[in-house]
Amino acid sequence: MPAPPCSSCHAARAALRRPSSGCALCGPCFCTAFEAEVLHTVLAGRLLPPGAVVAVGASGGKDSTVLAHVLRELTPRLGISLRLVAVDEGIGGYRDAALAAVRRQAARWELPLTIVAYADLFGGWTMDAVARSTAGSGRSRSCCTFCGVLRRRALEEGARLVGATHIVTGHNADDMAETVLMNFLRGDVGRLARGGGLGSPGEGGALPRCRPLQFASQKEVVLYAHFRRLDYFSEECVYAPEAFRPNYSNT
Amino acid sequence: MAAPLSVEVEFGGGAELLFDGVKKHQVTLPGQEEPWDIRNLLVWIKKNLLKERPELFIQGDSVRPGILVLINDADWELLGELDYQLQDQDNVLFISTLHGG
Figure 1 (cartoon, one colour):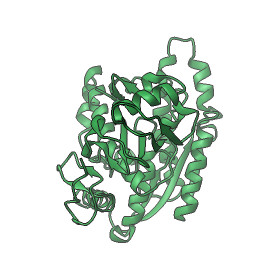
Figure 2: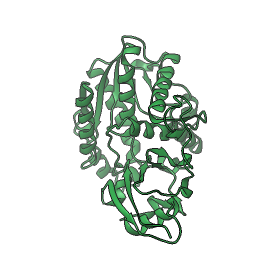
Figure 3: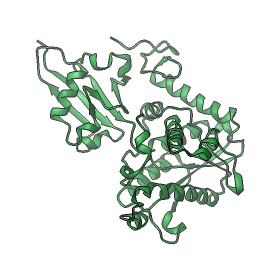
């Protein structure tokens, strides 16, 4: 059974059927459509005004890699400028390799990169030190809970350091669904009520944050990275098996 | 009787970690009675290539949810999934979507 022809260009064979529309598209037509949808998300939600200096939270993983690449493609249309901000959590053997991927991306895309380290921001505390101190205390499962809070703060500090007016993160539609499910099962009414929008407008003096990929499925993010031949880091954090979130990923 | 096939099997997105970190494998599938399809390719991979934690790659007779399968750069959903009959020189790529962000 051969693949059907691309329903956009009618020239090439389709490479995937989009779950959202049922359209079968070839790789290049899919990538063009994907970029147009991210542009629409940003414009329709007025997320990044012209002139914005945008800090991209860059982890070297697939989502932030795709986000940075797509925004770079859209820079002329949006009239924004980009800065990559990476956070070094101080996780031996994991973060070093991921940061190497971010450095390669910054060099290839000619984007300025700033790395902020937990150890510098938080009085010498690395994530490895946090993990040692919580181990055996009955709180060891919450390693990722600490890291989530610290990373949010670190990204804010890094963005301010580079003079950013806005922060973007690579959360995709699957991440959003996981978060809803997780908050529901924990009965976290406050987070459920706050989580519905396109980001936060910047309350309490914080920089405005948004998630331009939040309507893109994980599968399409990965396929976009594949068809655009993007180089990203795909190992799991050494502490991830302890986390609460993966329980909801495949439900 | 199906003749032996030479195919390229590739792993990415972190799936390669279950295969000694090797991404590209040039393999020869021996001749057998029935034609080679993805269903029996998975059995062959499990027996011959998979190095650790098979449950992270195989679930039942298919791949674990969250692993994308591309045959000659097209999503296997367009090609019959497990029933796709392999041709000589095909490329089959397995990409994990589950790791990191």
